[in-house]
Length: 286
Image (cartoon, rainbow, N blue to C red; front, side):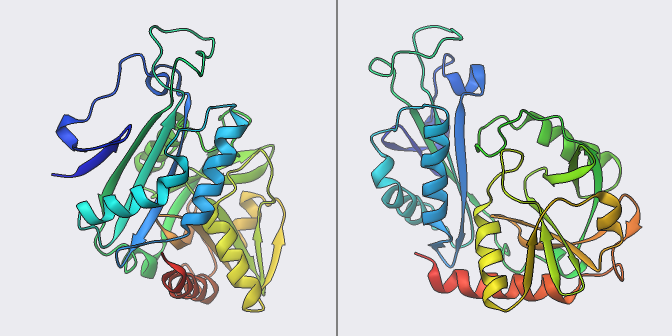
């Protein structure tokens, strides 16, 4: 049985409780982060911590007292759960006032709710799917306008994954005004010639921590990077396509809406980027 963290306490998962008035439950008024663990160490923790603080600030959400100690909490959960490979999920909500109300509660009277738990994923780094690639479909992007904030409003991405499953695909890329924004839980890329193309940062997409690291490693490896919008048609005609996220690292995309990308098999750029990312991230893990 897992040990989880709830508001300052380490508890068996079956003893963890949250109020029915918690605004994360009632209003999706919360933010979250997912940090990968490889070899019992945290990957890209500093990036996740900085993005978490930005999300809190964007929503004018009070910072929980534990915020400066989150690294220690993560490490303790790794230790308590003997976690070698997997993820740590962190969620902070605006807390649980005495009753339901659209108006934000008084931050002096209602403290944020903080929850963390582990997910063991043996074989995360050696995922065989990376050798064959994934198939995706395109769907309309119907999310709210502030996707740069990593909130717990995940209903539409969840619906998108179910649309993909129903179509016999692995995931979906969302499209707005004719251009790809991102995947349901990942950033989207294509490769044309020697150039890696991915959507520019803005309120329309999540500022991926894995995205930032992969693009940095790509530039250090003398690969060309272009940050701009692209269409599904352009992606179908690309030499390669791939996604990045904290849980998939770099994952090749071999089919988009039934059309094979490139040779229909994972290409060399995605394979090399995955190799570099895992190698460098393990060196920098804490």
